[in-house]
Image 1 (cartoon, rainbow, N blue to C red):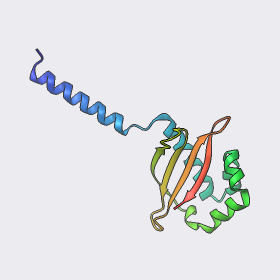
Image 2: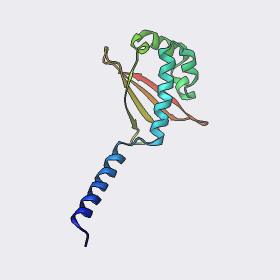
Image 3: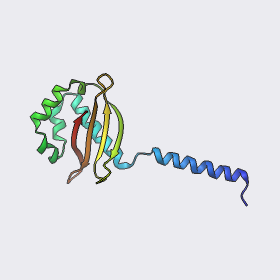
Image 4: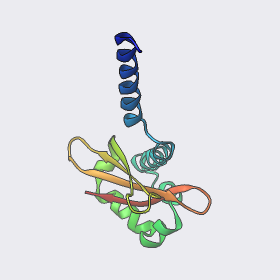
Length: 129
């Protein structure tokens, strides 16, 4: 029979492990966050052509370079620091990760969608809410 101290220790160990697992970001989410951070850093630095060049072919087909640059220019808050909020996996495909960022003054949310491209993970979409 296990002692009360052993039971307590095992219960504490179980709770700690469950808590740690719940807060740990998956490797894919971490990679997606790194990609979206880099993309937004280029945008905030005014390097919109470089940012657009890092996106997927799908992104480029639905948002041309001029349209992207115009969108960035029209949303001046993108030049400010955006605070990362969360990274959510697409529930249907599990292939896309939606990285959300918030700008404090305008309260706008920027979502950078990251997913697989033939050779690497890339920005697949970008929207402002």
